[in-house]
Length: 268
Ligand SMILES: NC(=O)C1=CN([C@@H]2O[C@H](COP(=O)(O)OP(=O)(O)OC[C@H]3O[C@@H](n4cnc5c(N)ncnc54)[C@H](O)[C@@H]3O)[C@@H](O)[C@H]2O)C=CC1
Ligand SMILES: O=C(O)C1=N[C@H](C(=O)O)C[C@H](O)C1
Image (tube, rainbow, N blue to C red):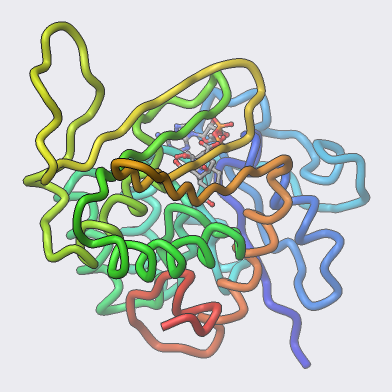
């Protein structure tokens, strides 16, 4: 069996280094190429040295040139970078696993359009645990569909640049959809001052940033007399990297299509 040749972009980042390590340790995959932005300290480094493992791949900023070495590009960078990489992958016929968060509606539409030509897995959270939580939230919201206020809390490390997290937003979408609401119409992002009483149709978000918190998410269903909380806490980025490799295997051999981790994990 041919090993999947994986490319990683954002190689010098927290997820990039975690992914390099995961690929180098995976018997079914090879690291085909590693990329980062021009000016990144990772450029010119041996990718293995970044994670303390042997490798002959050098981190490059020539993504267009390097795509010939890969079957799937895994991208955990920033929305503007991901969209540029997506166009290169589309031209080269290379599938993508996109973990980047913080896209606006136009960015999401661009991903959906590119997926008509190449296979793409796009998910705000690649961990099995969080994807189970999405299912639990759908069930909880359908049962707790009257008299329960929905509030979503998330906490991440001080380096995170987008808020609320992509995962928290997805949790909000899952709950809103189960309740027959549109998140765009009912989300409340933070509260300050004299807010008035809570509107029961809203879904509230609260964000904490600090230190090295890997990723905490809690959805609260609060009624008079009881409260249900569904939580996930990440203590390592390994589940995100392992999920990404599962996603890369999932799109191998597919011609095109837009998928998420519910598809990859068979949770639909
Ligand atoms: N879907 C999931 O399971 C997860 C998603 N993420 C998301 O992945 C993204 C990256 O997270 P981290 O690795 O913690 O960030 P990081 O800041 O540690 O790494 C980002 C990497 O992308 C590169 N980069 C920055 N701007 C770029 C651009 N315009 N074009 C190309 N490359 C660029 C940086 O040089 C760096 O190597 C974030 O959007 C984060 O929310 C993070 C963890 C899990
Ligand atoms: O930036 C991070 O670290 C994370 N980002 C993703 C998100 O925005 O949901 C996933 C995970 O929570 C870690």
